[in-house]
Length: 114
Image 1 (cartoon, one colour):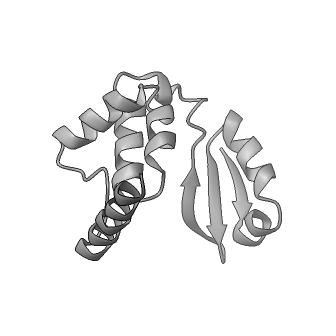
Image 2 (spheres, one colour; image 1 turned 180 degrees about the vertical axis):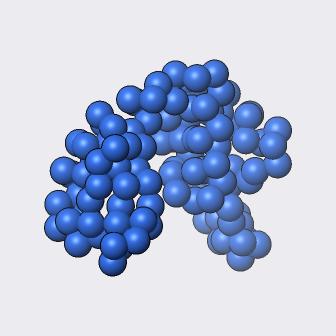
Image 3 (cartoon, one colour; image 1 turned 45 degrees about the vertical axis):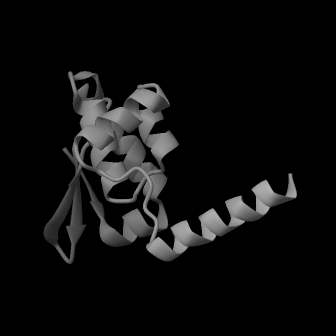
C-alpha cells in the first residue's frame, strides 16, 4: 500500500493515479487516513460481469455522465442502454413542462414554414 497526503494529491493528482494503477493508495489528511484510491484495472473490477453497466447506470442516474458516454462505458449500444435505464425507471430525457412546451412551439413553427 502506498500513501499520499492531501496536499500531494492536490498538487500532483496524476502521480497518485499512477500509483493506484499498481497498488492501493491511502490518502492522508493531517496524519489521519481520509480516503482510499483503488485502481479499477489493477483489481480487474471492470471485467466482472455487470460492473460496467451498473457503474454507467449509476453515473447516468446521478447526472455525472451523459447518456452517450454512459452507454459507451457500459459497452452497450445506445438504444439498448436507453431501454435498460428506462426499464429501471430512470428518465432518459429530463425536461420541465415549460421546456417541452417550448419544443412543441418550435416544432409547430417549423412545420408551418415547410
